[in-house]
Amino acid sequence: MESSDEKREIVLKVGEEILTALTSIADGARSNLESRPFGLSIDGVLNRSNTMVGVGNPERFAHAQNAGLREALRRLLLEPCIARVEVEWKKEARPPQTLYFARLSAAGLNDAVKGAHFVTSLDDLGHLAEHEAGETVTLDVRNRERTARILKRTVWSPREQSGGWDALVDDFESTPWGALHQLLKQDSLRQALKLLREGDVSAEDILGQILQQAADAQSDRQRNRRRTIDRIALRDRPILNKFQGAIFRLPLNK
Image (cartoon, rainbow, N blue to C red; front, side, top):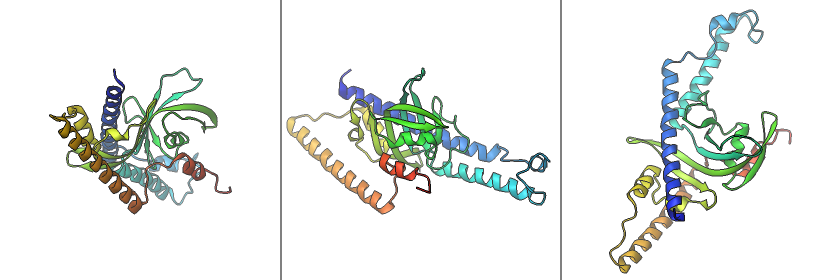
């Protein structure tokens, strides 16, 4: 398979998996909000062995537990996940692992995405999403040092539309090439994948090809300019870079 075809297949595969993951996480959050009993029961809180709760406030404690979990699930309805990373763990006898990251909380939905692990970007593993594809990172996970090589990394801002979940992609990287973002010819991930599946429409002559390339270049410039303006206005990136993340994760007394 030629390099360009292989890149295209990777973008299609990863892009489709991202759209599926957005739907799966949102559906899981909605299902749990509608049917799952939350937090601690009043009987459990009143158990004499529970020394965390005073005699006078068991209902308040249980309500706080329930409210926090429900709020986390409601956030996932609006923003299911913001990054996807494939990693190869060094010195571990296991296949490459795929992880999806929520901005704040996974709300217990760690297995919501088939074949992947779903965690918060604030978790120890969240540091992985801050590094580019091809980099090797050593991090402390649950007081255990682990080393991983980033195979693929995608960062996006999710958007729910009438036709389903979509995403505005910030970074799309894969080894051994690095950035593959240029293959996405649309702001919409869903629309970009549609164009990739249909294939490029070749021009009938050299002049047509030149005009098409010029139009694509102009479109790319406008899209990048619009994305830059959006990012300046919003002051918000779903995932920090590795330098920002290192500072963010420092203890407060540093």
